[in-house]
Structure formats: C-alpha cells, structure tokens
Length: 84
Image (cartoon, rainbow, N blue to C red):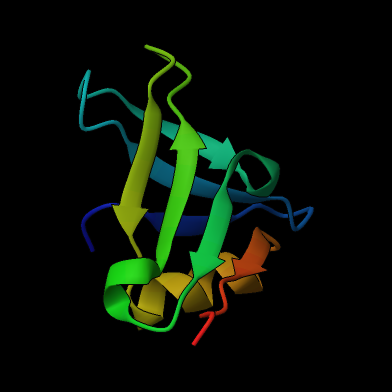
C-alpha cells in the first residue's frame, strides 16, 4: 500500500512507514509523530506529520484502511464536524 504501513515490534511499539512527497525521504514514525483528522468525506479525512528529513509539513489523504491502521496503532485522532 503506498503511503503508510504499520510494523509492530516484540514490545508492541508501533512504527509507521511513511514517505515525504517533497524530499522523497522514507522513514519510520512513532504514533506520536502522526495526526489523523477524520472528516465527513474522503476529501476531509487525512493524516499529517512533519518530515524528519526536510521539516516539511506533510498532509496525505487517509482511506478506510489507513484510518484503521492509524487508529489501531494509537495515533491521535481529531474528528472534524461540519457546521451545517
């Protein structure tokens, strides 16, 4: 799956593989380095992090499978509510 995947070590520390679209670096991030925002649509559901290599703020769309991986791995989640 492009974008993000999850690895669990023997001590149950969750690391997520990620890549920066700006500098193209690939790295692993702990759950605390990621944020997940769940909106009312696919367009408003995304995860974000700061690239440890170049410092860029990265925001990528999160489909159902990525939401499942991130929430299951302890990533902090923000639920976005519409004002309608």
